[in-house]
Amino acid sequence: MAKSFLNNHKVRGLKNNNPGNLKRTNIAWQGKIPLGENLDKVFEQFVNVHYGLRAMYKDLINDINKGKNTVKLLISEYAPKTDNNNTDAYIKSVAKTLGVTPTQKLTEINSAFLLKLGRAIIQVELGPAHIELTDSDLVKAITMLGDVSTSALKVSIDRFALAKQYIVPVLITIGLFFYSFVTVII
Image (cartoon, rainbow, N blue to C red; front, side, top):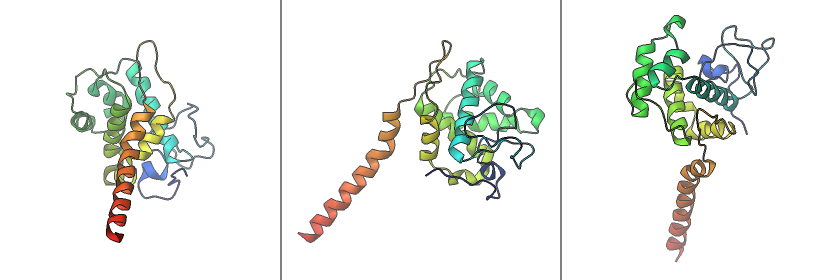
């Protein structure tokens, strides 16, 4: 079931199911609440948080495609100072989370990178409320992207690698539970 906070949360990015706080535009994002029904006059609203995350990822990948291929260039476009953002602190935070310098070229655009980038952005955008979104929420949004590669940028989304990251630990936990249960009975 899709996770939704629509009009039912104190944090604006969650209240709008828009954790990346994308501003209202005429872009026909999948899962977007039509502008005439959107209760927020500044930011997009989505039917669920996964569509909001998907739109955030699409926007970021599009910006990287346009040559915004360093954290400094990407975040300066995504959260400009002209929108009253502390862009310099935002850049430092995202670069630190990704383990790169602000001016290092982003070349490895894959599932693991997108997961880290999404987590870094929602930490800044949502503050402490970012913990209400799990990595599986971000993974779901990444898998909803489809093929977003272009001739200029190869984006590698390995659905199996993402699944392994979450399914294998669960299977191990279940196996250990049953092993412990059988051991106790015997």
